[in-house]
Image (cartoon, rainbow, N blue to C red):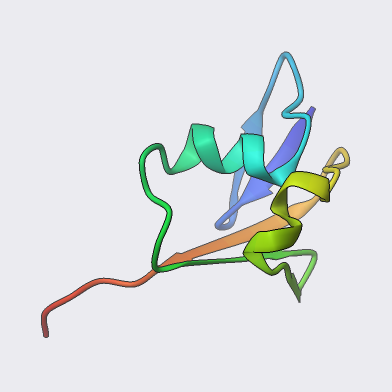
Length: 68
């Protein structure tokens, strides 16, 4: 499976079963301060487990940072 994550192509031999599984791979241990959009649609965190990813989906992950 090919996913485009933050404008970079990533290939997965075994596709993540859901957006939640992908986020465990991409941002392990982070659960707060993250916003995710799939194909330009923001996905609320409550819907991550039920959001199925498809080949060539465009995923944007934004993380909040502290400081200036």
